[in-house]
Length: 299
Ligand SMILES: C[S@@+](CC[C@H](N)C(=O)[O-])C[C@H]1O[C@@H](n2cnc3c(N)ncnc32)[C@H](O)[C@@H]1O
Image (cartoon, rainbow, N blue to C red):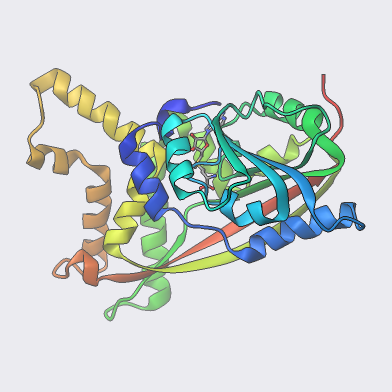
């Protein structure tokens, strides 16, 4: 399911690096504990390879625990962005596919994919994983679905406001997902299908909640960082252009599904008179972590 185009534009890469969540230390600790359990005598690890590294959200968190890190992504723009944010000299960034990894057989302590495996051709990715991971090494998949949105409102019960806002966001994204709907559902199910295909019988799962204090403006920025949003907008802008030439700024705003979502949310919460910056919300992400040991050889 390689989807290069989704994260290739400068616009999405900029939004991605600003608005996507970073991962907490607790998340790295779960994965590192699993690695240490498999090799109790080790205090440091040789090599981590990360695929689909994006702008390096997970790379910088895990890098201190490895002597060498190779972080790759199919998108050239994401790799440029990750290089700019790089915090460590022993990390190298390269354009590369999760389905063809530039690492020797049995050389990798940790193969990591954060919020990315749902885009991979899993058969080919798992075949590469079983080829390159050391016998005591691990595969770690990290992911999150749509956040739970908790708006701060006076006129409504907090639980009702939260369930209304959360379902509006879920529904809005599913509506525009088109052919990528199975991908959205997979993250929503915490990788139930992706996990079932891992060639291992030794898999452990963890979950960590991360909450952020945002404004409605920030929530709009998060919406802009979603690949299916950028893909949807590109498609409808092209259709509109083919019909009636370049859309005006006003037309563009009226077809912008992020604006439609924001306006609908304000209306339903009875907050239409407030500025987006003044509408405070908490976004709670449930980050799931899947660690697989002893992958069996494929092919
Ligand atoms: C949602 S972003 C995740 C980025 C980052 N790891 C994070 O945790 O936020 C998914 C990334 O996977 C990359 N990607 C998609 N398909 C890929 C593939 N087949 N091989 C490598 N990278 C891929 C995209 O370019 C994108 O940067």
